[in-house]
Length: 395
Image (cartoon, rainbow, N blue to C red):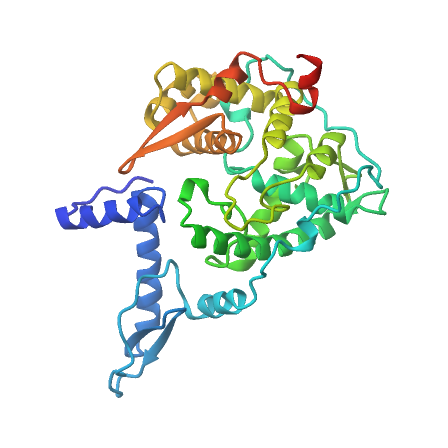
């Protein structure tokens, strides 16, 4: 839905500052968050008197001042906290007090060289490498990061140890999403310490205590572990990338594919590194491994990467221009019903995954974003990306 309104120059400046701070991706997110906060305040004030916002250096809390009472001298205006409510703030403070000082054990590697579990065949595919694939059939744009993929593969490898028949979907989603919430807090703390910008943040896409915790966990479980539809279809980014598969449909059990196992066991700078200031999401070996796997085994992702790289290299270097170029890849049947927001989501999600693999970078000029193809991106379009473990055969 599009809403137009008059905006005073000062208000526009404030909006621009909020977006430039990179707490919000655009004006819409900043305005939506402001409205949510306003509703919280209105609800708290209704029939109760004044609402006092109390702050310390470490926390923000809300307190209702009865109508008959006088405002507390302690009450003062505090910096705005996104989506704050009394209940949410309590959950947040409880969570923050228990942030670990290291990556949770389930995401750590045991460095074993051979699998102690059975591996699944990769999921089937209706597409083949090189085939033109309509944009609406690309991997879902909400699956917008790849570091959670690494985390979930690593966690599954640890959960599956000694379970040759796989781990139940319920156990996997519950256990991994719970641990991912803790991991998300740890990574958010690291991002804050290092002053990481939004695009490069390690914590993006992990469950966040700054939103409703249960909903945040459920989103992670559905998107980055697996979910099952009423028709018994198991889906999620790990399935789409063919890193996991499942047995059974009524009570599915998840298993890693060979590619999923190999990816899980590769060392990672975030989960296995010692330096807290290290900000690389993946090693070169991990990136080359995924690119080789995608270019040979995941047709929708491979086609999406090549399409975007070609469009950006041809001049579609802004979100608006790239969306216009990508609309040409929408099928005729879907074009009439495909919304601009869905197209933008497909573009944004794919670009974010490509950025994690260093195929493309985002450059910012104020609130404007420009896409640039990297040298690795150019190698990918020319089929010159060779995994590190295979390079010796080509030298």
